[in-house]
Amino acid sequence: MTVLVAGVGNIFLHDDGFGPEVARRLAGDAGRTVPGVLAVDYGIRGMHLAYDLLAGVDVLVLVDTVPPVSREATAPGSIRVLRVRREDLDGTAALDPHGMDPVAVLGRLRSLGGELPATYVVGCVPADVSEGIGLSAAVAGAVPAAIAAVVDLISEHNLMSERNVMSEQNRE
Image (cartoon, rainbow, N blue to C red; front, side):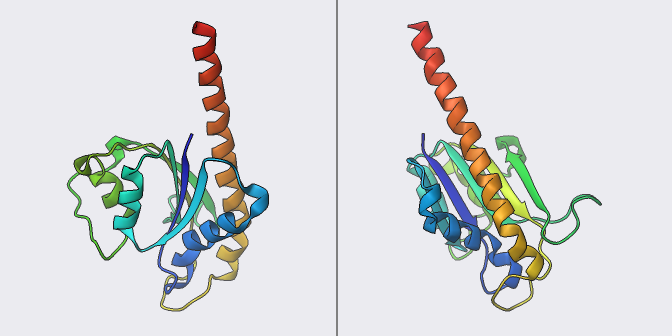
């Protein structure tokens, strides 16, 4: 099974650099290296992400900032894990070759000849997306929780994969 952890966001907009930071830490953490898992800082390179998805990925975990959606998840640094399905996407969204709009990238994947893999978003509510480098204290403090959420998602999919293989072997 191939898992792509894609950190997206602009490091020059404070907390928007959350996704790249999580991806960099995952990629650099030898203790979390799992065969078939690739963590990449895509930053604002949407077309690069699209092309890598066309190469074939079983599970995609996007790591990005997300807007607050409820009273419970409004505090900066709040982590949310979301599942993305094909019906959640707009297949007509325009791809910007010089920017990153994950919804457009995933929505246009089919028109490029690819299929949406099992896709999740591990998101963090930002405190500050103004110009500047460096995460706010709240968002920097959420990075370990986001890494743990990514590792949990990968573990869940590895278990499901093993169960599917065992099911197939039992049928034979």
